[in-house]
Amino acid sequence: MDIEKFTEDVYTITEKLNADQSPEIKLKINFVRERLIELYQKNLVKINHSVLEIICASNLIAQGYTVDIEKHLSDILVCDVFATKGDGTFIMEIETGFTPPDHALDTIDYYIARIASKIARYSQYCSKFALATPVVGILPIPKLFLKPPSKRKKDEIQKIKDLADRFYKNPPIQLDDILNARLHSVYLINIDKCFAKQLDPYTYLELTEKLHEASELDL
View 1 (spheres, rainbow, N blue to C red):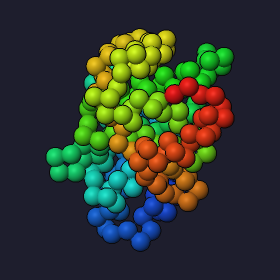
View 2 (view 1 turned 135 degrees about the horizontal axis):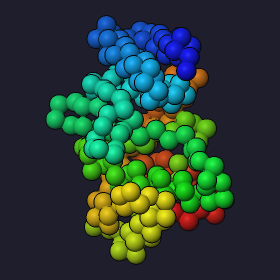
View 3 (view 1 turned 180 degrees about the vertical axis):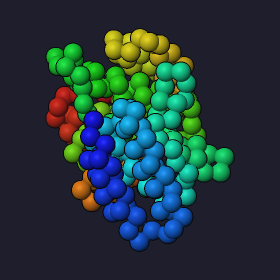
View 4 (view 1 turned 90 degrees about the vertical axis):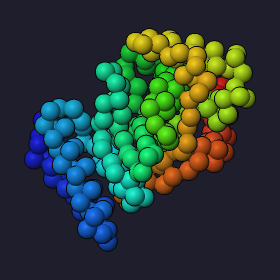
């Protein structure tokens, strides 16, 4: 653990994010920065993920949200970014595409299952749920989650559950979680330029569908 290097890095990114911002927004972004340093001292965050979190947090702060990070939603569930505005709540999960060595031979299935699991688990805790990823990554979002619940067929729901159950059994995802899960937006994070761009899931799917087809992903 190198607290000096971590602190230097998050201060550097914060200075870039605070440029031309109002004192109120700067104060809220600085709160996220100090929270990240506190979490790093407890060995709960890493610098690469922290940079993504603070970029996304600053985007939401600029939209008028009050933001916290690494917030506990239950005994086993912790979200990356939790934001509130009025009576609304917003949860964002950041995905980098990392898969553990144990899944070197089923990386794609594992990643699809993780994305599906996150949408199903986290979206029930908020008014709006979003996924975020660096611009260099592609999220394999199952098309099921772009349909309203009334249009989701039983066999589609079961297919997602079967895939998720291969990798996530503690606790298993329920069919109703998949039926009612919602994905409101996708954020593309440009790390070098310190901003995140919001897309609706349908636009994101249009951008990535040809790549998914070329990769023969059955989503």
